[in-house]
Length: 210
Picture 1: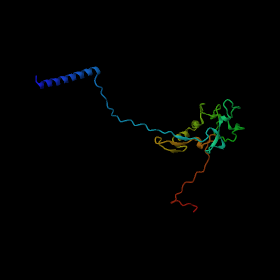
Picture 2: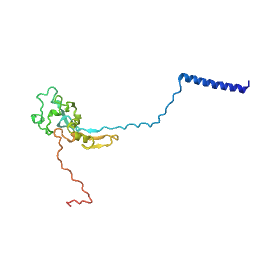
Picture 3: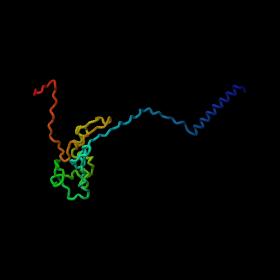
Picture 4: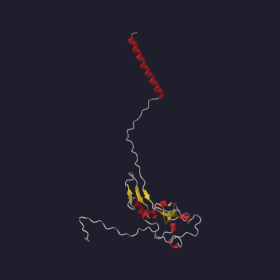
């Protein structure tokens, strides 16, 4: 047998052996899994939505005094300082007309509401919703919204109460006023004011006093 024939037979035997081994491995382990390429565009991350920053007035939920702290803010006394739970003494007043000793200097003009319409009788550090749920004074806007729903809806849309900051809440926070920043809780009607005169055009309108 010649040298070239022997080399050819060896190569053919090696190829046959490789094919046999590949067929044997396929029968044992199964075909090689096919990987699908996901060509769909990547999902963009949801933008961050900033919460509104509501500036509540200082001393909310306390009885203000004439004293002030080192920052100039009025020092308040918690309601529970006098109205202890379980030791309220006489039945609580239903209206401002029944007050004879404390809070007598309070102006009250808020419809036909009684004190207990908004204040929890068993915990004077809490307010009370119409269904009896007690809430903190910090959440008093929820109490206002019960009756003033249309005004609160305008407030949520930015048409009432003033707003600063970012209109697009994905670009940054918005700063809002609290209801009690402008309205007194016991006398919420905004006082009558005289609007400022409109600006005068310096070129086309000559002041009458000159």
